[in-house]
Image (tube, rainbow, N blue to C red; front, side):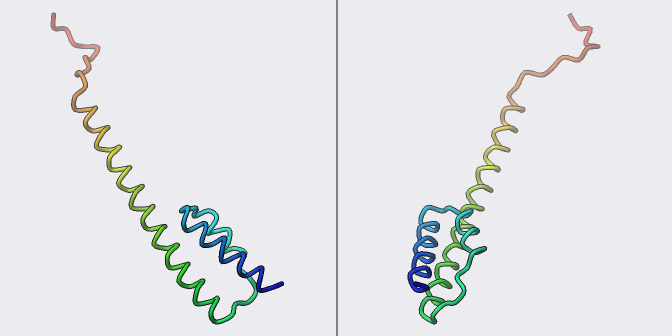
Amino acid sequence: MHGERLQMWLNQLKSAILTKDLSKVTELLENLPDSFTTEDATQASYLLAEAANVAKELRDEVRQDLLQVKKNIDFLKSTGTPRKTKFDVTY
């Protein structure tokens, strides 16, 4: 029974990594199985290293997206029509 539970946990971890579901990875980390065989611990270690890589990739993607948004905002500000102040008395 315990072996089945461990395999299910490992399969869920694999699935979470493949779908880049970091909230599921976190949930699985919060609910670790009680014990691992050496082989399963090694497999879990490799999977967790891959999960860390996925987290870094997603972080980098978000960073790039935020930089692009900033560039877009700066561009829109630079191309906008200048605002007239209330005290502009030119005709």
